[in-house]
Length: 297
Ligand code: PMP
Image 1 (cartoon, helix red, strand yellow):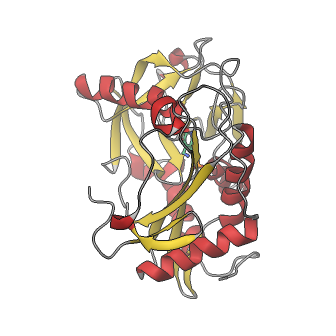
Image 2 (cartoon, rainbow, N blue to C red):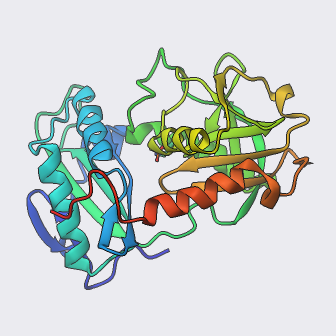
């Protein structure tokens, strides 16, 4: 996949510049030790023009997560939402994936880095997880322990866990992996939250060992509007033996249905699941133009 070409404009340290002309420091602490913080947003083409779904929520958590790594961002939420809209305009995008990243300056120590850099890119990314319906496996790797990492922050280095789990799943012929937490309970996917359906209810892992996604919250709202109960709890792999459906949720993944888990198919065809209904509502929700907080800055 190509993320930029000669015309692509990015936002880098206060300026809109050509992606091809941007320079980053090879001595950056982020490159060597993974100390960067990022977020992910999607802009959808609506009747009123491009709309970045839940932009304020994304930027707020980005700024907060950056603080936890001593990478304080010099912009407030409204300013960064404005920059993101301008970036779409600079690139002529209506539908796009937007990736803000704050990364450290040169520092070969493990001490907090005083100077850092802000980078925002926009590009097209339609099928994040590759296929419409996934065949997944429960990974031999577990998610990082919340006692070792702040798992509720999107820190670049955390994604090594996702990279090794996907590689291992693919080597065994699967599309992606579902990970357990360090106590053996189902946690989440490599870059998405996980839901399963049984007896007309949805089940998902409680907070603690997961990254609590914005899309996960949107699914709670949609389920409520459909009169479907969502039960948050701790589930074991055995709880997945006889289920009606399952899906991943995330800004990039959106709602991606799961075809099988460790070769065990779902009881229902995807089209007949609550997940599919949630997916359709989600598509309507993100592309509708009447939002309470609708604004193009
Ligand atoms: N879990 C992980 C590990 C993720 O990387 C993501 C994607 N950011 C999610 C869950 C879903 O988060 P969101 O819905 O906010 O995109």
